[in-house]
Figure 1 (cartoon, rainbow, N blue to C red):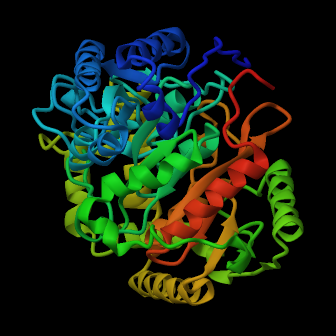
Figure 2: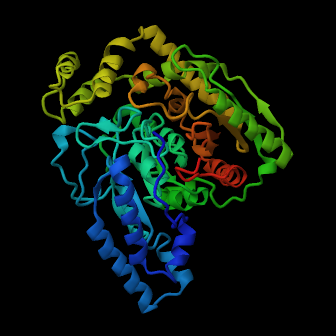
Figure 3: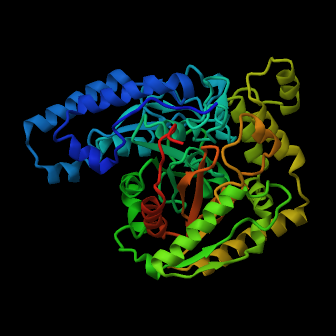
Length: 490
């Protein structure tokens, strides 16, 4: 079922919206976005808990501040770069007064008493949260469905998934129910939803944006792979969001450096080399990538080099081993987490309960534990080999990209699949997950729609702390290929 969403006229970026607040009251903007959510949410189920009353009160405060006229526009932009900007937040992040279950039934009555660090920073910058958005159970799967809130449906086709785990966030942004959003990513959980929903999503260089205040948070070696980052419809919003979210760590990046795209070294890979674990890359995704390469060579006069990085073929194996490296305690903690630190879940028994409709957990959550504990078990020798491969792959990639290179790589082998079908191709997330292991910055950029009206896109990858290169590419690709396309226009 293709979805034609109701028309909506505030298709605006941060800069346009903050400027507009000098002519349009903030309360009118917030009311408009609230109405938009009320229009589309019964169809897509993206916002799972709202704070509309509090948002309206905060909008009144913004209008009062503007009416008093104590500061000029430039001073206000400096103090509050997101003044009055509506924002939604993945439910896995704590926001005061709202639930923080991550789709876990045992946490359904939990209400956060504080804000996650990135939430606090964006609120202090003037952003107004409208609510929290759906995710997969414990952020473990790339379909956003759980026993607490149900399933989120793609705004471009209700019969398709929105991705995960930040799927509700990607969906409400695509449906123009919010201006900007917060997601987290340990295997592609920002970039897959951004791809499936036709928006922009950025996984920063590891260690730049704090992960504090989300559930579940990373343990042990996984802290090197989890990233928090911005999601939005417009490429120009990525950088200001990243600046605020990174806080003092923003000095580790090079966001003030001017980027000349003609001086960038461009590389591309059409697929991972043929892994047996993942689906072949869809023909339309390949065509979009080739069109992009031709555009760069024609419009910028650059050479885009086709490279074959052979270790990418083992992306899933590398990710699975590194995620469970020295994991005896971490895996116990993971099964305990599924029981919310109560009685640890026994996955085999939980599967039996699920089959008779008695489990409070989703099949992907149960299956992933079984997979990690039983099926994806390598010998110590193989584990060591794959861990070594991860390190050598990172060295190879860093040397290739240097300080002035970017890699163009598929975001996912297929466009947004139908609901439940990811169970039959569970390892396709390897196309995004490998870059968590490598710790590289990646921006997912939309590239129009497929013949069936589903979003296409590309990952743009750079070397460590060269996020400014991928963000510059995002802005260029938006101008060249149109960026976000309103659902229902195909």
